[in-house]
Image (cartoon, rainbow, N blue to C red; front, side, top):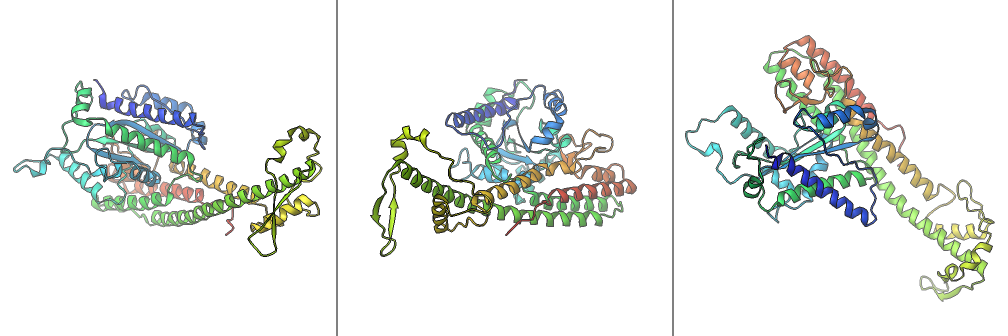
Amino acid sequence: VLGAADPTSGTVCMYELVRGLGLLLRDGWTPFRTIILASWDAEEYGLVGSTEWGEDFADWIQAHVVTYLNLDVSVAGSKYNLKGSPSLAHLIMNAAIAVPHPHNSSKTLWDARLEKGPFPPPSSVAGLDLSELVLEKLAEEQAIEQADIPVNPLGSGSDYTVMLQRLGIASTDMGFGTSLTDPVYHYHSIYDSQTYQEKYADPGFQKHVAVARHLGLMTLRISESLILPINTTHYSLELLNYLQKVENLASANTIDVDTSSLRSALNKLVNASLRLDTIKERLSEQVERATEDREKFVNAMLHEIKIWVNRKLGFRPKRFPFRGGEGQEKTFMEVEAFMLAPEHAPALDLYELSMDINGEASFTNPVLKGLADVSSSFGIDLADATPEDEYSAIMSQIREISIRLGRFEQGFLSETGIKDREWYRHLGVAPGKWLGYGATPFPALSEAITIERNATLAAIEVGRLVTVVETLTSTLTPSMTLTP
């Protein structure tokens, strides 16, 4: 096995991400959130490296990690495959739209999900008897073309498994895969070679560059966003789609299952998420206003301090005509005053004036009186909460919401896990029992219908899902009352 695509293509994109982050760090950038970079051992032997690390540090991961971005095979064909937790679908899409297409300047990387290979499709060959596998592949490609946001759910088969299915960490996976019109990719063989990459998969390696850019942009947006870019409303609506699929399965298998309680709980979850979206939008607007007010406040305070320092040092103010109003003047102080005479600084009693502006401010002090006057001219009322108070309160609310968003995926976990494979604890999505890597929505309920064909067990699984959804609704309900 040579592994030019699996896993080397993913590894080189990871290295490029590391190089880019290093350049940012050398330019003075620091991430708002911690970024951990990992390369796992023994993936082919059973996801050993990632699974052991996830199990060893489970408590720490669940307390601190908000997303996991996986990259395995980054380039093997023409079609850009995107998978992930539904809460990250918009992040994946928006970041891909911002990255140029590797070969067509009029398109974006997002358009590459519809790319075809150079050969004619099997369906165009007259008299060809299509296998069940090919028919499934054709249906999958058609579904991607018709979907509004074609980001498929994650099953298993790569290192995100422990993060999502065991620990409840929102995860993604992506890479250029083969379509039915691509050259055959000889997976796990000596033909997964550099020659295959250079001649068929990615001549010029522009797809590798695009994947690295996409991964890097998602990393930065998660790290730098004040409010985590986790879309619980899209997830909640996807859960309703999952339920519809399960109801269709029950009908097809003639299993009588009452899912009305689950549908009701999901509708409440959607409403809770929509309310949280409103809060997030208002907080974003408030933090923008508060940041502007904070800057005005600090500038006003610094201006008054400069006046006071100049007076202490004996510098006389310069007066210039003020054109903003007839008969008015504006005082311009020497900004360099304090810097021109730093030797006087130790002799100044900088603490003789109260600079505590929390609570009730006494404006008999000339500096604070001037500060209040200037602040009022900017529309800031120091008699109420100061901009710093408002800013801190808003940031406290944002912190709580981001914590709730980061813990949302963990609400799907059940301590007892899925029947017959209790290690898998995610009741929202898991690899199908007999599907290999493929994802099954509401796995325990789906398999109670399709494999066990047991209405009693299905009813129990509906009850478990109702409890899960109620937990998710509680997670999305903030403790604070947002002031308009």
